Image (cartoon, rainbow, N blue to C red):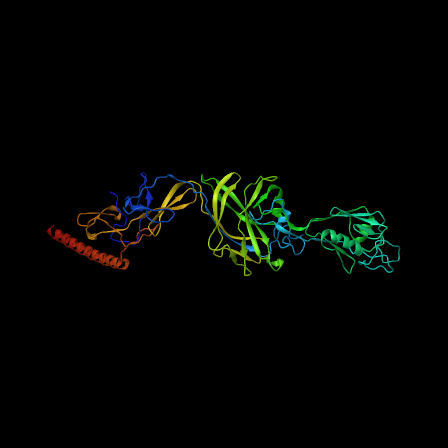
Length: 501
């Protein structure tokens, strides 16, 4: 019959257990173990009546990935491919992502378009025709002979300069409207350009002119006059405004992948599983979308992206924004979101659906500290899914839980061995192998014994070695004495026989 392995007078150890040909969990003496099944996720018993523990080499079904544990340090100053050549004071130079560089704004869905702002272009420093030459100023004339405070190449009557679609013409009459007198000054020309763009150009002490785009439109200047080079520029001039673009779409399209790779950093990868147990390679990237280094009104904000297609081209979606702004304080701690994992719905990778994933990056797991490498340091990235697996072996831990090891690498709680005691422990019937059988005098097994189980251990002996060794010496001495008595008696008998002869 099958007995509880704990129905024994001692709880110092436990036998090594195995599964027999019938699927029963047995101890070293071949006796079945009793227990109750447990919920593999919670470890709580699913019943209260012990039964013979049986486990077949069945498959455990696949478990889809539903949650990802993520921990990393994001660098305060990311080093991206684009940051090394970007203009100082821009989000790109700060290692971030500039939506204006994308045909489809990858910021979270619904993010308003970035307001347009002025951009500038500074030409080369130029001198006039004075003797000695001096940097040009607003008072320098557009035409004249040397030596004089005039451009080195003179504008001529009939020359035109087209600014954002508006044509300025050099004439031999007083300056009016879009006409400029050939003998007028550089300052007059710059004021005419500023009236069109909305921001007047400036001129430095070194004779370098700075043009402004304004916010209404991008700056575009064309001219047929060779004298334009005397202002420090080469025609045509094309300068885009800062900001602008579309509202956030939450995706990176195929055409924008190069810009995205150049303006983001790797966030690691993890193998996730769909409902059928198919492994899916989930690639992650981080993009910094705002930086406190840009001054007042800015803060450190990051967006997390996952790759949805490895073959996307054109306007097909390649990467998807998780839709959450991760905001960090000056001390490097995550200030938002806090308290719970973020949820990313409808995650799909190359046609394999993972459904909704929860990304848990809270409780101090995600930080932003200075890093000389400028890259993300991934501390933890794990997930809760797995493929289907077949039972390979079972073992019992010190808590009495039967743990199954499956071919997919999972160790899952299967059952709990029950501990029992008896009212009449001394009346149990001893069996081979150190097991005991219930008798009428012992009474039925009572669940809930206070003993313990020692997994993967053999029961130690309770023999007192010193005492037994002393007994062995005494026995040996008694044996030696008895041997001498027998020898003496035998000699006496031999002597008597010799007398009779």
